[in-house]
Amino acid sequence: MSKRVLVVDDDPDIITFVVTVLEENGYSPLIANNGEEGMAKAVEERPDLIILDVLMPKQSGIKMYREVKGDEPLKGIPVIILSGIAKRTFLRSQEALTEFGGQLVPEPEAYLEKPVEPEELVETIKKLIME
Amino acid sequence: MAVKKMLFVTQFDELWFDALQSLMDLRKSGFNHVVFIHVIERDKVAMHRGRGYLKDEEIKLREIANVRFIDWAESLYEQGMEVGAYMVVGDLVPKVVSAAREEGVDLIVTGHHKKSRIEGLYAGSEELEILQRTATPVLIHKYILPSGKVNNRPFEKVLFATDWSHESEKAVEYLIGLKEVIQEIEIIHVASEKSLDGSSAMEVQKTRKEGKKKLDEVCEIFLAEGIEAKPHLYVGDVAEQINRAAHERGASMIVAGTAGQGSLKKRWLKSVPGKLVDQSEIPVLLIPLHSEATGN
Image (tube, rainbow over all chains, first blue to last red; front, side):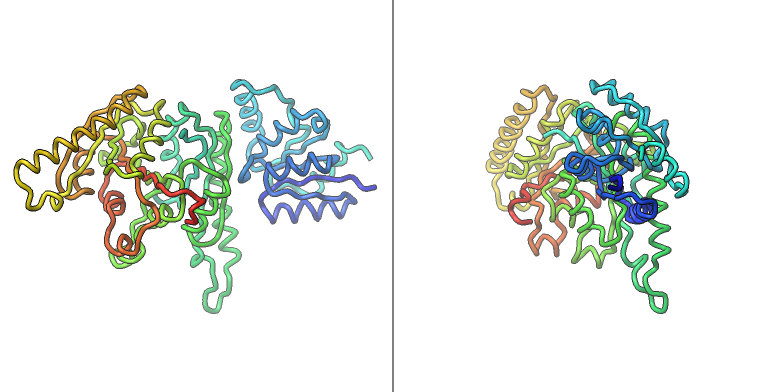
C-alpha cells in the first residue's frame, strides 16, 4: 500500500504541484487548505508524512505544527515545512510561543523554502518515509 | 469584549505595516491573531476586450501581495502571534465581509477609501458598506496624524460619542473590554440645534441638565471599571461637533455606536458615521448593534 502524505496549503497552484510530484512518485496525497482542516484530517487519516505551509487562513502552519507535535498519537509523524516564511522565523515563533507558557516542541524534520524543485522534495520525502 | 482577532484590510494604498504596528497596544487586552486580506479588484484582471481574463496579471498581483504579507507575517510570528492571509479576486466589500465571518474576527481594520461625490451619494464609502453588512466593529484607521507622525497609541485617549441609543450601550460594553489599553475616555453627547428650535431658555437649560445627568451616569460605568472618564455636552451639527470635540480634547480616536444596516434614507443622505469618517483626522471606530443572526 502506498504511503499517504497530507498536504496542507491554501495555494491551489502549490497543491497541484505537490500532488503531481507525489502521485508521480507513488505516494497517495491527502489535501487540506488550512491548519484547522489539516489537523482534522491528520487525526482522521493518520498520514505517514505531513507537508505543511505556514501562512494560511483560519489556522497557520505554526499552530498546527504545535498541535501535531503535542498530540501523542500524531507526534511521531514527520513534518516537512514548505513555506515562503524563513526557517529562522518559524523557529523563533516556536520559541516565543513556548515562552508564553506553551509546551516545548522539537524542530520540524525538514524545512524547505518555496519554491522547491521536485527532485529536492522527493528526496526529502524519501529520507523521512522508510519504504 | 476583548479584541483577540483582527481582520486587517489593505489595498496597499492607505494602510501599511506601520498602521498595524500602531495597534499593537491591543496586545495588552489579549490581541494575538491578525488576518490580512488583500482584494484584487475584479476590473484589474477581468475580461478586457481582445485580451480575455488576465491570468498573468492576477498571478503577479497575488504574488506582490504575498511577498508583502510574508514580510509582515515574519515580524508578527517572531512575537508569538498567529497570522493568516487572504489574497482574493473580487469586490472588496463582500470579500471582506465573508472573510470576517469565516474567521470570526473581533475587529475589522480598514483605511478610508473616499468615493467621488456622485458615487458617494448612492453608495457611501466602502467601509460604511462593510459596516452595513457585518456585526463586527470596524476601525477606519487614519493612523497618520495631521503632523505627519504616526498615531502610535490610538486607543489611549478615546472620544466616545453617545446618543443614548442601544448602539451606544453596545459601544460602552465594547470599550470596557478594552480597558487594559484605554487610559481616558471623553464622553460627548451632541444635542442638535434643531432639537432646541422653539425652546425657551428654561427648556434649553433643562435639556442641558438632563444631558449632563445621563453623561455622568455613563462616566460612572467607566470609572467603576477603572477608566478615567469625563462628560461633555455640545450643541450643533452632530458630526461636526464630534470632530471639533476630538480636536479640542486631544483625542486619539473617535468611537461611536451605529445601527449598521442603513436605511435607504441614510444611504442617500449623508449619515452621521459617513460624515464622521469623511471629516475626522483621527481613527474612527464604529460599533454596529445588530448581530449576524438577524440576517444582515
